[in-house]
Length: 254
Image (cartoon, rainbow, N blue to C red; front, side, top):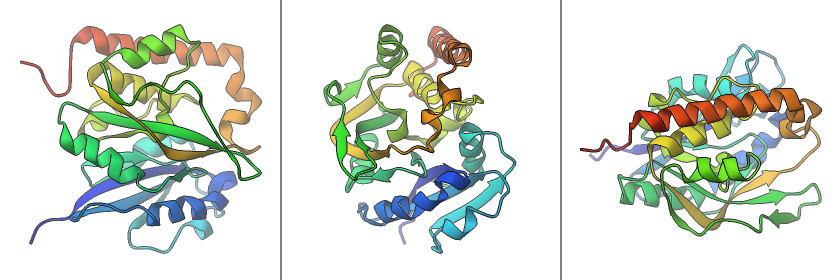
């Protein structure tokens, strides 16, 4: 019998975003994967409260864990302890995958061992249910090593691909230490680290509905505090540059 191969979906959640888990789950259930593949959803609460658990679906494909609060980066990295698959897919608790997103990501990385990670186009999901796209998406196809960092530095710390759509080889995420221990921008930190050591991919077909709502972390005043933001960007940039300067690559060269 052929062993089933897994894509691990990692979701960090806290109480305010827990009611959106139902929509995220529905979007997962609508994914179609090739024969021999399945997904396993690891939902990691950033905290030890009682408000999240009632919103977690009762499904054997879903693992729910809790831990002391440390922010979404810590929650996602802890979730790696239960990531028993070859690939990691990020899905924020308040977001939704579009139909076919997992299969498209999987096809890219299965088709080319030289690609370590993939991202896709994002549509903002507005409170009225409408969607809004970004008008400066890059061309679809390979993203060469260092290209994300160069664009990020030249465009006010804004990457041309969205870290909330990240799909990556588990071994590579583990080797890089998971998400950065930052109060925000931890996903950008991982994206730039991946970019420093491996070629990536961008799919122009929308793969994620990115919910805009008043309670989201990126909408809070603390997220845009200039002093903290400068510090976050400095350490994210320093890590990516250091990895690039070491010459380490995935897959290994020579």
